[in-house]
Amino acid sequence: MEQKKLAIIATKGSLDWAYPPFILASTAAALGYETQIFFTFYGLQLLKKKLSLEVTPLGNPGMPMPMGMDKWFPVLGMTLPGMQGMMTSMMKKKMQSKGVASVEELRELCQEAEVKLIACQMTVDLFDMETSEFIDGVDYAGAAAFFEFAGESDICLYI
Image 1 (cartoon, rainbow, N blue to C red):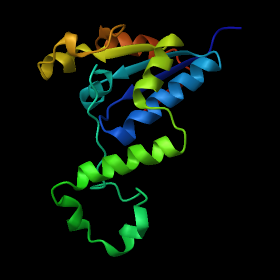
Image 2 (image 1 turned 45 degrees about the vertical axis):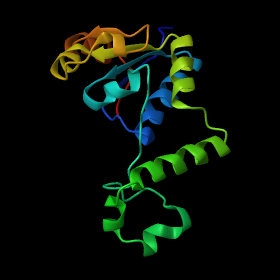
Image 3 (image 1 turned 135 degrees about the vertical axis):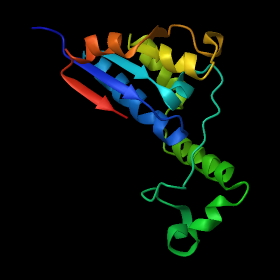
């Protein structure tokens, strides 16, 4: 029987959007799937050696707010200086209190499980990024190379 394949396209570079590709990829690898994640545009932030990921409640109406803030705190208040930092800190504490691994730990788990991490070369060039900013073990390729794998995958996810 041929090995199942999972292809993931990661496009977001915020703390809350960092978890899905790494959790899904590490789980799939543990289940025996050959897995690749193609990081493009803001998703490239997830491959940086030094992560400075934040979460913002703006434009995210599904985000559960602490103390029922979504019911009484005006949306405009989320634009106040320091709110993004506060929300990021609260999210990190919540994740830690629930025993959720950090993004760095999940990313490392993926690498140990031989998940192929691919940085979109076009986007790296577009944003004038240096490969030295990224963790070791990252491959660099264009969309065409990723599509060779994605075209044969059993599951393809866009995150």
